[in-house]
Length: 84
Ligand SMILES: *[C@@H]1O[C@H](CO)[C@@H](O)[C@H](O)[C@H]1NC(C)=O
Image (cartoon, rainbow, N blue to C red):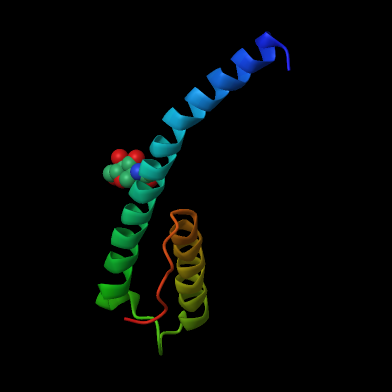
């Protein structure tokens, strides 16, 4: 490998080392925000899920949120739990 390529690779690695923690922080932020928004939705009596006339769409929203959260947890290296 020529010296110029070695230098480019070193620079890219240094950049990645700086970007990875930023990505993790953004992912944590996103997950935290999503959790808060979902909690507000789920605990709002006007947004009843089971037995509502909008049950199907609300269940799909819950499932989409769960899928998204699981992906974020996996990216962070955390095994998500399915029940509390
Ligand atoms: C999280 O929410 C805060 C406050 O609303 C917002 O400023 C920030 O951009 C959000 N972060 C992400 C990654 O969505």
